[in-house]
Image (cartoon, rainbow, N blue to C red; front, top):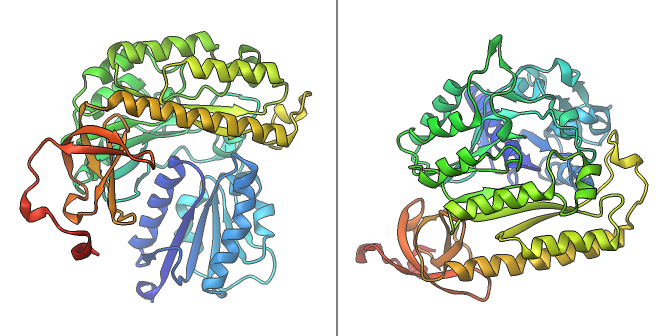
Length: 454
């Protein structure tokens, strides 16, 4: 009976959520369910939620309605951070049948014997985050070219704007042997790139696995993964500046597989705001990290997270952040507009920034990001780099990324999907992607026209 049932997934939020969705999906497949796209009719819809911003909360109801339009009798399950923080709130949403917390989400198939719709509020299975099971190692296949590998979960930091520790608990790390086993499994699937992910991956090595104390650091994790056969590229996702040590930067610069791309959260260019946020560094340390990366990897790409509109951010303080970022040798920004989150210190702070001012500042920084990315791409013109091509046909083009995260495109050719090629970057298209010349031999038999390949 189960062999004929279909399950679909929708993921909100971060790369970590995507890795966990894939693990949950495999648990359904292991008991006979067929995974289908969320746009298709399914018997079960699983929504993996996020609660980092107000917008992610609001999107949940929209996604529920979209699922029920496909199949009004479908069984709807909510998991993820929002489900851990506010299970009753999600359970009260029309159409939601089951809400599972941080531990229970990985046991979802234990809860689906009765797939009848609930007339009342959804059923909740959730534990206090302090009692949550240690950890479930996860990895995802977002497409045929790249996988997200979860190495760590939870966070011991007490940033005043953040609810993630409430949703995911204290910092815990997967055992090194488990990480390496998962990486080896990924390599056997002909996936060319692994992205390391977690809540605070630089904290790797903290916590226990079962009753066993960890004996490895983040640097040792990186060193061990660099030896895994079959993986062409390894990419470090977001890592805190105070945890990105010089030894790690130097190892990446000389490694076999790790690429010269770092995403390092800043959040504010003002020490005043960083203190109010309870970040564990000042902006001077951030400058040191950027300088060290560029010293040993001049062509490295550096992405930055920044929050605008935090309480107490005056016009002068915002301009301090803007000017700091404008002068910094970075490549792009991820801009977040501050939103009040319940049960955080920041929600009680004075100096609330009006929402229209927050959005104006966000727009200014997004404009700066466009300039930064353009300048970085221009600095790479003439360089010979390696491109990993992705699997989607976008308006007759195939896109790919160089090792240092420059986005390129060329006319669609399915033979290029999930392949690596040496190219020379030549010019920037109007849409911001980069044109290139081939530096290795592309066989004539692979030159398939757009018309032939549609």
